[in-house]
Image (cartoon, rainbow, N blue to C red; front, side, top):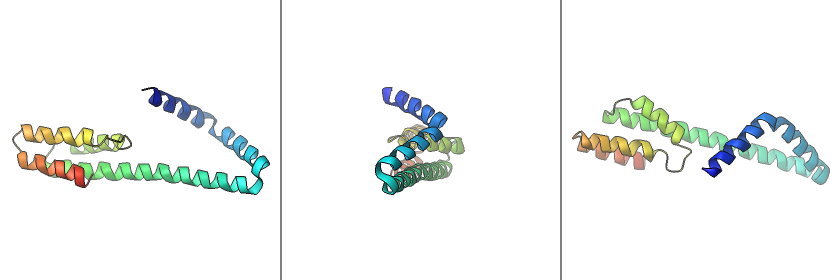
Length: 126
């Protein structure tokens, strides 16, 4: 909980003052390391952007694939559960928090085959 609070706090200040922080950091590194430092700042920026795009791309893919699995198995509100999977995707154990209860629900409704399908779909595809 502390890590989440600190992450939100840091994200807020970086979002609010990000441009000024970036300019100060680039100027400071430029004075210390010259062109090489500015080059390394550019590499770090591109790397961070790539990581964010990768996380978002993975979350979108997991959400869409989960929604397809929910729809195929006949789970009600499949698009909503896919959206929930998208939002929980960055959390290390997030997607199973959506598809495992859905599989249990299918099992409790007497749809054992679809429950097994959804478990396999969740583990192998999502």
